[in-house]
Image (cartoon, rainbow, N blue to C red; front, side, top):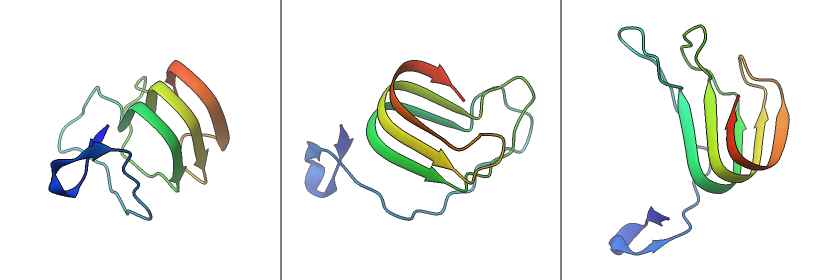
Length: 85
């Protein structure tokens, strides 16, 4: 669960946050790791990428959509215990 204003815990929703992911030196970590999330849309994801490293890792994730993104085909994932995109 995400922390919300006031320190309460519960579902948090982000809408339209522009994010730029990059690194100063080569990194062997995925650009995005979504752990214990539900109902997430990733639109136009653009991030630096290292060959052999997944762009997105899903763990315990439900209802995830990716579209119009570099290096990841448009897709919808109903449920993923562990998946690399």
